[in-house]
Structures are given as C-alpha cells and as structure tokens.
Image (cartoon, rainbow, N blue to C red):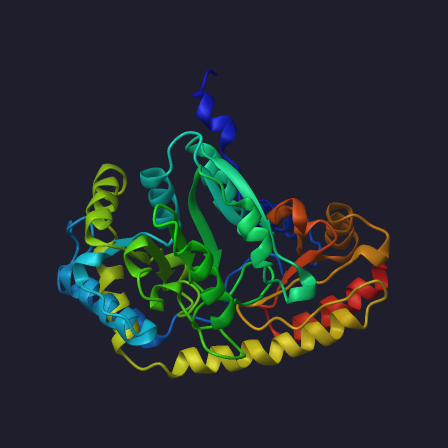
Length: 385
C-alpha cells in the first residue's frame, strides 16, 4: 500500500498500545492492575449525564456551528474569565471533540515547514508527533527532576532561535505531575516579551487537579493573552474522557481559522455533549473536590509505596494524577522494566521513554485506580524485583 510520506512523521500515544497489551493478557486469564492509562476511574457526575439525556430528549441531535453552540462558548468564556482572571469573549472560544484537536489545529495553523517548536520533554507524546507531522522541527526542553520537573529558564533561552515559532508549556504536567509556579511562568514571560512572533500553546487540561498552590496561566501576564492558545477541556476534571469534550481559547482571528479547520474535519462537536458541558461548568462542583481529595490520598499511597521499593526514587507530584519515579538504580532500562512489570508482575505502567528521550530512567504510573489496587501493585512490583 502506497501512503503519503507525511504519515512516516506521525507518532503515537503509547498508553493505548500498553492498554491493548494489558487487555490481551487479561483475555488470556492474567490479572492486570491498570496504572498505564491517564483516565479518572470515577463515573461522570449524574447531573452532567442527566443534562445530556435531557438534551437528547429535547431533540438536540443536529449540527451546530463549527466553533460550538453560543451557550457553551459563553459558559467556557465565563469560566476562563473567572479562573484565569482575564476577560474572555465567546468569540475567542472554539469547542472541539476532545482537547487534542486544539493541539493539532494550533500547530497546523501556525507552524510552517522548518519552523522550530520548543516543547517539554518528558512530555505528552502528541506534541512532538504533531510538530513533525506538519514539517516543523521539534526542540525538546528538558524537565529536571531536581527542579521538581520544572525546566531551567537558562535552557529555554539557549533553545530560542530566529526560527522559533512556538513554545508549548504544560502545567500541571503529564507525565511528571509537576507544576510550573507563578514565578516560573513569569520568568518565561520575561524571556519571551521581546519576541512577540513566538506563540505559546498552554496546555492546562489538569488545571483543576493541583494539590499545592494555585494554577497560574501565562495569559494572566499583560501582553500574552492574544499570543497564547489555552488548551483545556472536561475529560480529566469531570471524568468525561469518553465524551470527547475540549476547547481552545485564543484571539478571535485565530479562532476563526481553527473553526474553519473544524468545519473541514469534524463539522462540529456532538450537540448533547456540548449541553452537558454547560452543566459541568455551571452545575454543582462537589464531585470535582471529592475526586481531587481522593487523588491526593492515592498519591500519598503510591509515592510512599514506590519509595519503599529498592532502586526506586519518587518525588511528590503536586498536580494531575501521575507518579514519575526514577528507576535508574534498579539496573534496568525504562522499557525493559516496564515490560517485566507487565508480563511478570501484572502491573501495567508506561516507560518514561514513551514521553521523549529525557524520560529514560523513569516510569509513569497513573494513580487513577483504587487505593487497594495501588497497594497490590506495589506488592507485585516488590515481588518481581
């Protein structure tokens, strides 16, 4: 089969590959504890589900504007205005089926062949995949364990060239669970203030899952709102991964172009899902706080457990629901140990190299699983090693 050359530049998200392996083992009768997939194990709150049901019953089963129905764009604009302390108009919002399309569309719209994009490494693998796919040059910015998986702004300065077109930042982070503090983000602003030609893609999908301090967006720095694309959504905060509900916030000119890409690809986001998203933001928020508190409890269990394993060293993550232990003292590579734990221990995790070259020496564990299963996973890892 002859395919387009560009397909050779397309990467993947290893979590789904490991999940497929784990499901195959389960089908063969093996017990597997799933710590590989970044998906809350909580049910979507009932009020959100009911809003979708009511929407279907009301006949909301037809096309909507590509950028989203006016009500959901207003709800999102109000939410971002309130949480980021900036003024956002509904025309600056584009609703998409999941948050990934914003990542794809923003890079596709702004990055020409040969343009350089600086991105966090280890980081979400689709960043690098999309940069390569559009013909851009991925420039990895190392996240450092000794800095709680922040990056050194001196390193950022060194990577910026006349060809730099975009900087991607992610806070809280996947896979490390690290966060960028307000002071660190302001340092980024100082570096970029004299380069208005550099766009910022700010991935804030885990912004409601912070365990220490408050979320700070680079859009809160004067002069940065119009050159930043905020990527956010409902999957992580409201346990709505399968609903595919995300959005981008950007200046109105760019929003029109992103909406045009939506027209050419997805037409629009599912109508009843959009109505459910309004309820998510405007209805009760108790479920979010309950889930966050449970994640904090699970975090403490898994970090303590990982640190009790010989050869493991794990710093405390301050956001998201991932632990990213250093496993170099075990003597295994990340990929080898990941395979051993899956096939011999029945524990599905992800190799740090799934998130880039600087992920070697680490594993990612998602603690979006029960306390009992996390404790059992620690026992199994100890038994294997």
